Length: 406
Image (tube, rainbow, N blue to C red; front, top):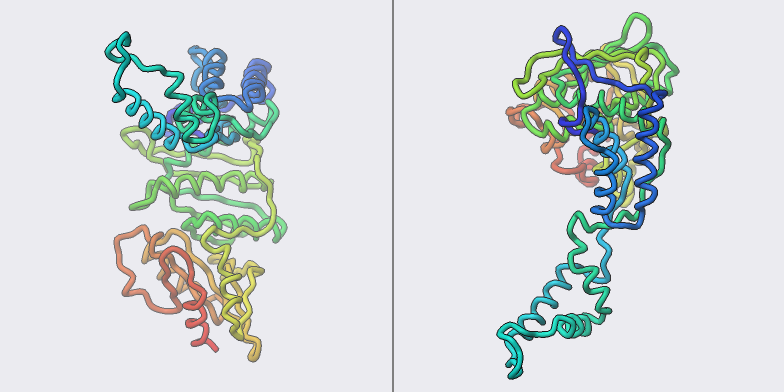
């Protein structure tokens, strides 16, 4: 993803318009191929060597921002590691201590006031560390960012890189959004389920309504509208965009606060722009804090079973429910759904509860993370089927809530 200083865009009639580039432009494709070749060539070498090579390629002409942005996207596909036989701080501690000892030793009669043999100090320190002298020198500052070694990078083609750049431009604009309104046309139910599951995965605050054509209108609160965690939330919302690009009929309009003065602007994008996603639609996603919950719950050996195969539930055309967990009681067959709400405000939770009580399943638990509360209101006034956790749901506490349903 691109940082704000790499987003090339102009403002026309209070609308932000990114400077997209063509994936058929021969000059841009040649540049992309040169950058890709540099990363391919310098695999296994130090970061500073790669950066020196890129400095020769990038230059300083009027397209410098584009060049840097393409390089940034390639760096995002890299893994760098410190290459050292032992931790660099351990090597330095032993070497500097050995040098200090050598400095304090009595000097020979013909030696200068600061004379001691560098090679012998290195050899002595290497012996203490049980490494070779050249290994000691090579790893002495291996923990510096510039000395890290490019251990792996995920190859790509020049056309892919240029298309990825265009999507990254749009994502960079969305980082300044206060609100994002999306319309998705009628699609196969499977694709709609994956869309809403992806919204749940990124824990985005959303409101959903059916459109007369059988699609969905989705309103996402933007990162600039939140009281806290806006940077983290903004990255999540921008990361959601590639999922939307898989649909054939969609459009979005974002309200932005643009530039240092946070000028109110609009940003519009639709399928007609031809942006292509670099991701794949595959399976059901779970946030990291929920991945281990089913395993921990099964260890309790209760009469309840847990599943993550909940289907999308239309809430009377006013919203949609994608349960994160479905619990079934072995003796009674009673089913209880649990939805884990992402970033939230007290008002949003109250509205959600009202909607679920009108159109949702009979038995449902709304789970809230106290760390993801974005408003200033407290939690004490919340009523209803609410379970509040800190960092992740606790299996035994959820089971205690389920016992009330049983």
